[in-house]
Image 1 (cartoon, rainbow, N blue to C red):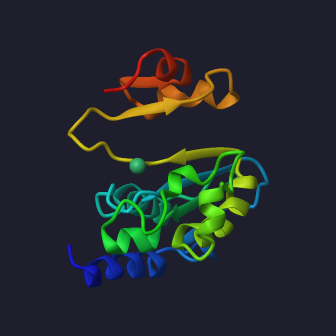
Image 2: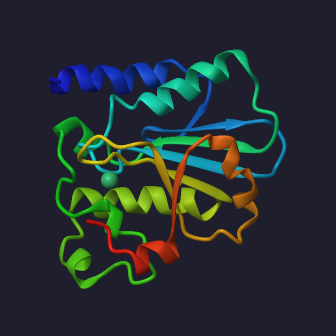
Length: 178
Ligand SMILES: [Zn+2]
């Protein structure tokens, strides 16, 4: 897909919803009720997306159904990498959110695209109660979730996703992925 077509997708998404754009390519839908705040990011890796299909689908649903509670934030996590069709531009954005951030590598690359983007994304995530981070596998696979903490309140809602496969953090540690 050409960059201009990708630009059209992003622009269309921006025009196509009633949400308040709280940062570039990050939209917030608000029910008027405070809790909870759920955030869905797509394209944290710019080459792992099917034209931002999930976020576009949610935007479509919200045209006919109001949010029942809380806030819903939808975001294109790494728009620059998405436009370039690359996993990342300078550094892997997926490595930018740990307690050790910023790492020495990032400090050395403060002018990097991802370093600047993290400064935008972090305040959004800090006010988020539930975060869904959408990725894609390299080869075809059944949809699955990685759930770090099954003791979290959110875990009781997992069946609503209708997925057959789930990895917990414990499985990730005990069963190295190929
Ligand atoms: Zn990814």
